[in-house]
Image (cartoon, rainbow, N blue to C red; front, side, top):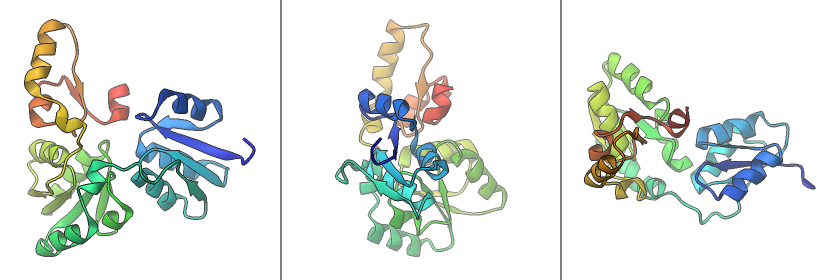
Length: 211
């Protein structure tokens, strides 16, 4: 309050930080919503409670504002799983393809891309590129990429990385849970493995799942 800072927090951070963000006029949301909220805020200092790429995304949308993060050591396995030097080489090998990257990447990887997408808008954008006859290079999440490829039948080459959290989910364990709770509806994020998505009633972004 003393510094007149706008506090924005991701759904995944400690609930006390989420409460503090809401109580002080900030917001809680996914990475793109966070960056957009910071951009629209009248405050010149934005504190980002999330991982490093989220702070970078906020800076990209608000280049003239000061962006603060509690720690730069908070990282994302998808970001770490797509190092810029190796990704540039991958793009060079497949230079005939449109490069589409997920928002969960570093600013340097985004700079290599033709399109940057979220889990909310990835499907219509991939569909759009397919309708134009474009071949696609996708990075970094192989599960989300596989889901998009299956849904659109687009010509896609996938980078091999995944979220360490979503990668822990197993279809057979979900089936066991479903037997114990047969009336439950299964909501799944498309960063989950295919065995999980095949059992889901709804597949969507965090904001879509909440709706």
